[in-house]
Length: 526
Image: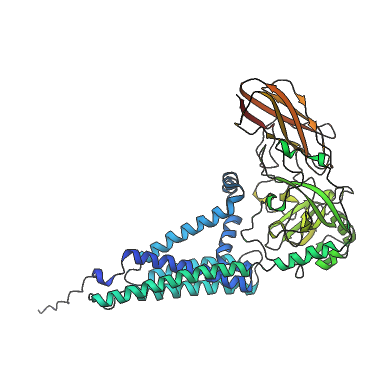
């Protein structure tokens, strides 16, 4: 019997494979080009549809509670840049591996790019603020990523199964270098262009600031110069907009204009309302000095700021809408899909002073603080009261709907606790012997601060001197002098509100309803 021997298949040679370094680079460049193209299309058509940012938003929405709290504690207000940077590192690693898997054939890398593209597509598709036009950015991103990968792969792979000539290798390498540089530069330009195009609200903000200057506003009382001790280390009484703390879940600051803004008040009301920005400007505008605090603020922390807010009285809007009996929650939603519930009984208090705010410290709201319109409710932590970029308010019940942070283990109502903070001396400071001046702030909205006491090394409490009172909705500064000898010392403070209720010594973490305890500072005197 005759046996037919099959010819031996040639073994792959080094010349038929893309070098490892180039293979990894091709993967990275291709995956980088995809979100850059998506960012450019998003900037042109719909800023909310950036696939890269949509994936980041999805990570935030579905992150376990413990991970969220760790990020806030570890990185503070830098948590969003850290998340974006971490995503970039992960993508680069996956892209490099995809390139290495495609040294002979482009298919493995194409599959990886396609899967990443589908992840971006899904994040955009299932985003809370999805609109049909939003599918264009992730679609273009995936197409560009696949196209760039195939294009660079074809330029990097030597032709045929035999070794390339020296001159051919030099030509192909030069072509590959030029192609790679072109992709890298194109990605940078596309990403930067998309980011710039997605910031069209600047002109709108300037126009609003100019219009407000010509409108009648019921101004808040002037801040007396004796309301703060900045020369002793306390903050200025009003926090500059650039320094005002920011805590939210938005990776991308919504690019909204005043002309395009509208808000619906509906649900358990007698009269549904649809408000435009011009509708707000036609109503009585009032300025109120309000201190805002974040529920995540640890004892002695800095997630607290004060500003003059201008807006429309929210209680009057709700009275006009006619809140029906049984509605105990105003469920507000941001343009980016974030949502929370605010107790109706608090909003309807005659002296509470809740606002739909449109300006902050003499200018239109900064984009990162809610332009064109946000909620501000004195006396409640921001997670239940301070919806930025607000576009919807439904009067409902807490039993029917749960807010974003309520679903993640935080409490339902969020009243601000009576707190104090020591700003001077700083922790572990070294001071000269003699008189030591302590200074800090205290707050208890909406009742205000009646007394602050300070003690050193566990001794007797000494009542501090209080700065001029501006109102129950704001913080109050304090100072106290001590004659201390050399050595290490411990200082503590406690505040008492205007009703005589003193800040508790019991230590509690921020979750679920705000931190508590007496702030403690260790320092030394030389």
